[in-house]
Amino acid sequence: MAADNQNFFERVYAVAEQIPFGKVTSYGAIAKYLGAARSARMVGWAMNASHLKDEIPAHRVVNRKGLLTGKHHFDGTNLMQQLLENEGIVVIDSQIQELDKHFWDPFIELE
Image (cartoon, rainbow, N blue to C red):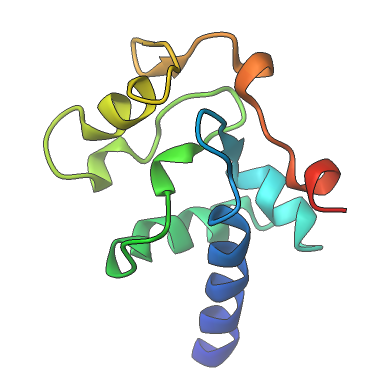
């Protein structure tokens, strides 16, 4: 099973690497794109482990409501928010504002 998880994580990373600057997606959107719609939590686990790979823009993956639920996995208290704000995304109280404007759906964009 560990090999299956590793393969799934690599597939998650391949999608996350394609999220454009200034855009975000959700754990669930990545899971749905990968044909594992009920595996949003597993996508979250992959993002939590992504610190081992510098090229993964994990800060661009949020929950379905735009909450920065993974922020405690970043160094510093507000690094995830700062990275998003540097890309022009407004974050108030750990939630992305105008989520629809910034949302990137891999199911649509990568098909």
